[in-house]
Picture 1 (cartoon, helix red, strand yellow):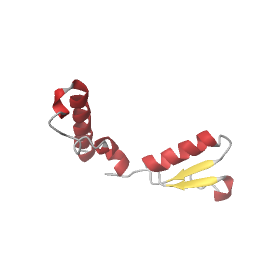
Picture 2 (cartoon, rainbow, N blue to C red):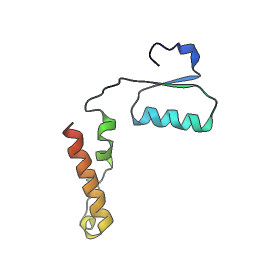
Picture 3 (tube, rainbow, N blue to C red):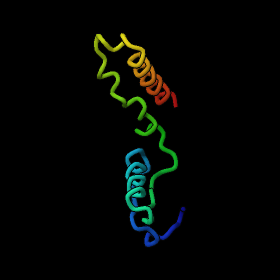
Length: 89
């Protein structure tokens, strides 16, 4: 929608990361007729959204019990892989 007129929208969300898109999504659910624009760069190397999988807080929650169940091991492994993938992009 490059070059769209601002007056064509009811609301404009600045930021196209997870928070911006979540805001726009929730607004669209509560107000289905609302015209919403999300503005942000098309490329954001190293942005928070790219690393969101690593922000599951699984490392901060690691205790002596963390690796005793399969779900906990899986959560830790998923967070670890997301962190590795985010830094390798």
